[in-house]
Amino acid sequence: MKLSRLLLASAGAIALAGSAMAADLPSRAPPPVYVPPAPIFTWTGVYIGGQIGYTWGHTNTQLGDAFGNVNTISTNANGVIGGAHVGYNLQLNQFVVGLEGSVDGSSTSRTASFYHGVPGFGPVWTTISSNMNVQGSIRGRVGYAWDRVLIYATGGVTFAGINGSIQTNYGYDSASTTRVGWTVGGGLEYAITNNWSIRAEYRYSQYGSSNQYATNAYALPVLSYVGAYGRRTIYQNQVQAGFSYKFDLAPPPAPIVAKY
Image (cartoon, rainbow, N blue to C red):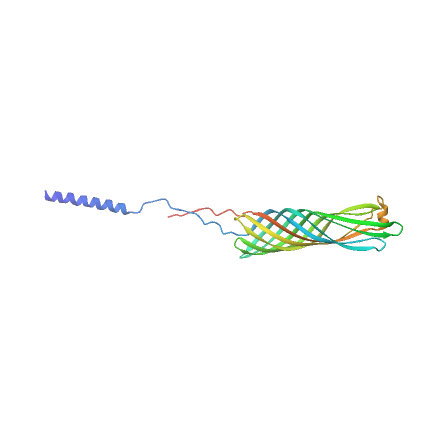
């Protein structure tokens, strides 16, 4: 009887010990999913955006005629300028290089006039006017980045559509030309997110000299006889604020599932 009780007690103790050991064994929970960290910001990529600002400058205008009357006048002009841009940046460590093109509409206009006497015609007033309604550029960019802050210099070729007219008290003539020049400047850009950024930029541009002659002999013969002409050299400053959206060229990496 004592032996049977001893066997029953031993069996119960072994069963309790087995249950405790089973409770201490690790469970087969599903493996955790690895979520990669947020991508590190880079300026590399294709971007598009818009800009608006203010332009001011001056034009040196040489007015003259076939009789040797010449007068040089400097006129100032200002106006609103705004448009769109597209470009590409490549970041190498902290240096950023890129290429950008822009197109702007402008309200800049200039007018200059002078008075002189012409033998056989008497006193003559000559007025020359011009307005720059479209402006564009293709520029390189070189900058230095502190994470999301980019300071850059820019420069390249610029072009402008210029409508001009020349008038005397004997008649009127007009012409439209496209001028090509150069532009340099710099700016500051800040990336608000990995895709959106804002900027402020200043540029100085020069469009060289363009001539306009009043030679419409059939419609306005007197202008041809007087030989009125205007030679303009245009200098321009502009400040603009803008925004850009940078496209992600590669998709983010897929989640990695840990395997055991």
